[in-house]
Length: 153
Image (cartoon, rainbow, N blue to C red):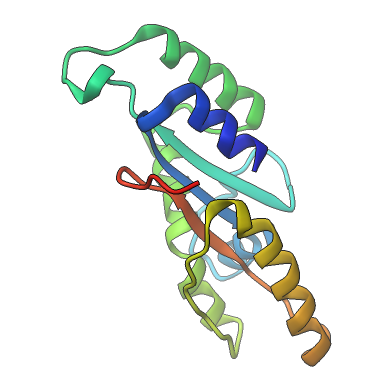
């Protein structure tokens, strides 16, 4: 939540994507060959794929150099890639989260919408509730927090 709010505060409407995924889903994709290599710098329980439009006011040719520099430094610290190939690999990892779960066996998938501030509790409470009914369940939550048109808080 802190990262989302920080990025949104610093980039405003230029935050065009904020996608959440967990390590279990990345590991499944590696196991079943959906990813050629691990798109992450190091294992972590959770990953965020965030994109920020670098154009001032969305006008082509009005690129802002300072945000680009900060973005690259942040990617290096967080282990994100620098190339278009790295970017495409991270997006593939996010987009394949639902598909790969079926390769592992039975799975239940669903989409829900909640206010952004309620996402952490939804994940924690949802996992706890399912674990009571299905001990040993392997949850694979992922989701979209921000898109080019989202304005919720």
